[in-house]
Length: 535
Image (cartoon, rainbow, N blue to C red; front, top):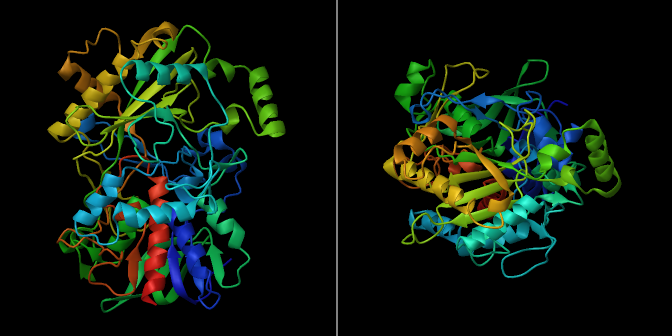
């Protein structure tokens, strides 16, 4: 349905943070909130089945289906950057992995001048959001909206990897979101009773009947309208293609994510004045940091052929697929409850590091990419990524047309540290594969090829450049801070603009050391508190 013509708050983007903001602000019955989402409602049944990311990623009905510009760091390759275009945003498409990052990440944010964002200040927000089936303790909550569950599936190849990593000297860690992140173990998931718990399921579904909350889907925001230096309204294109405008009596909160939020700002004339002029846009407010400081986790995916069956074999026949579907329908169990990865590890590539700098995602299957089907042989995957890359990319406009996708310029592997770390991570992965009990299950190294020597730094780096892909954690493009390159202040207000905040992963001054969905939800909780405190 069409939105009302005005509201107290207009929230742009119903993703991981936007759903939280709409819920928390509309808890006051006197506050009128309108939530605008460019995509449709989350009615696609595959969204709610955990393994459904195989069907929803790269599906243009619910995925923006972005691609990067050809990147020199990837030897000129362009790679996919899926982003959710549906209620729940990327939390409706992602791999369901619940990871907060390291306490040091948030303390570093505070040290950079972002008062209120240290670990001791954000931990209560993580706990408030969380409904962890393990129960409440010093690090976890059990009465929040977001369901967090243990794996409902185990596979011997992943258990063998965890054991082999311990044999290689890495400790077992039952809770990487607890006292220490370092070690190997198993992921927790954003699921409830075998179904995905997206931000829309957690935060919107329970409150959709509130009279003061309106959720408008198929509403692509094209511009924030300004009066002088104040943001006063939002223009969007509705399902019919007509342009609608809604006034925000109090504030506009951009929650579009690391691609869409800077794009909307620049389309609104907020950004680097020279770049705006080059794209035919009049400058409303010169803010050169918009779209800059982009960071992402780049993953190298090693694949090993196995001498015993893996999930590749389980899903290959129609008969087995029917058995798997029946098990899920009857018991909410089996492979259809599986997240993108089962086992994980947070490790240091060098002993002198203060905290882990690489993360593993281990899958009992192998494929060229989700959505393309598994390989026609028994295999498993070890994905390794650098947690804190130094490389910085940017989002650039392609012109003044809001429908034109922005240019994504990642600049992967553009520093010596990043190159060294990905090579070290690949070598650690290959080393783990040589330890029992995993070594006895491996028939052959498929990627990279066995003839690539571990000692061959240049060859390994070149393989990484030719084969690595995003793990889909874009951040940093509306940097929070106090310097000239910052876009928002620590209260997430856009510098120099009244009535406008940004609240999503774009505000991260530095990417967190792990998956980004849980931090995005925390950011939504944080900005809701900040807005209510300023009332």
